[in-house]
Image 1 (cartoon, rainbow, N blue to C red):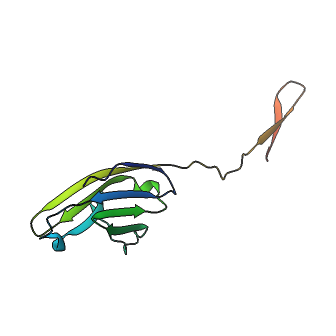
Image 2: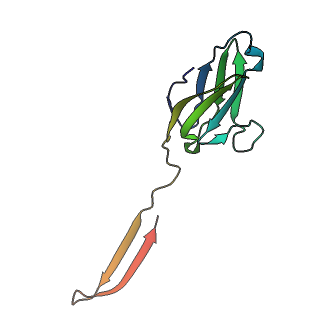
Image 3: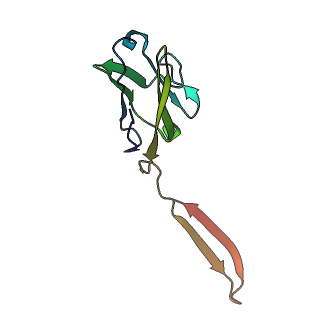
Length: 127
C-alpha cells in the first residue's frame, strides 16, 4: 500500500498511487483519504482544488496538477475499514522552474573633472 516518493518540476503534475487490499467481507466499508502535512485533502477546498482523487480496482490515486513549491511535503494515504486503519506515506519534492522575466539595467556614470582632478559633477543614467 506504499505510494512512492515523487520529485517534479514546478508546474508539472505529480501522481501518488496507493494500492489497498482488504478482506472481501469488509471491502464495502473501505474508505480512502489523503492528507498533506497533517491536513486532509478535500477537492472542494481552495487550497487543494488542484488535487484529484480516483479509485479503480483497488488502486487509489492522488493527482496533483500544476504543482507549486507550496505542494512540497509528506503525503499520506489512509485506508479505513470497519476493522482497521492503515497509513502509507511518501514525500513530494518540487523543484523550482527558473526563468527570468526581468530586464538588465545598465548604469552609466559620467564624471566631470576639474583641472585639479577633483570631481565637480556626476551625471548618471539608467538604460
